Length: 185
Image 1 (cartoon, rainbow, N blue to C red):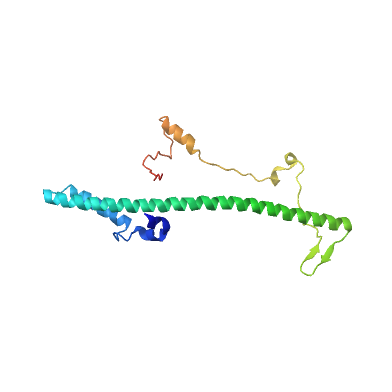
Image 2: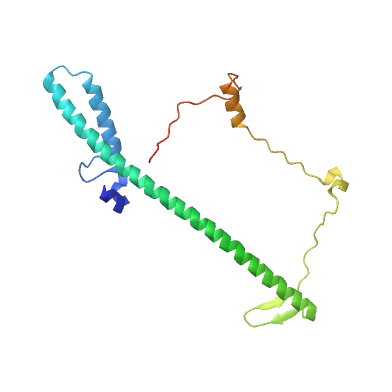
C-alpha cells in the first residue's frame, strides 16, 4: 500500500511486484476460477480451487485498493490544479486591468499635452486613430436586413427524464438504468 502512495508508477499497467499479474489479468483469472467452480466434481478439486480463488481475490483486492488510492491522489491533484487556475485567472484579470489603466492614463496625458509621439529607444509611443467602428444607438431602429438571427436549440434532458418517470415515453430517447460509477470514500 505504501508503495502505491509514494510511487504511482508502481501501479503502471496495474501490476505489483508481489504477483506480477495485471489487474485485468487477475479479473480474468477470477472469472475463470468462478466458472470452474461451477463444474467441480470432487472435494479435492473444490479445496484446490477455493484456495486459488482466495489468493486471487486477495491479490485483486490489494491491487484494486492501490488503483483506488492512485485515483484519489490524481483527483486531489486535479482539485489543486483547478484552484491554481482560479487563482491565476484572478491574477490575470487584475494585471490586465492594471495594464489597461496605465495605457489609458498615458494616452490621456499625452493627448492633454499635445504629444503624439515619443521615441524612447526601447519603446516608441504613438497616438493613432482607430479604424472606424459602428456604434448602435437604438437597436429597434436598425432595419431587418442588418440583423442576424441566432437560434440555439438544446435538449432538456431533465424534462425528458421527468416525462419517463411519469410513464410517458419521449420519442428518440430512452432511460439508461444500466450505467454504474465507482465511488471511492
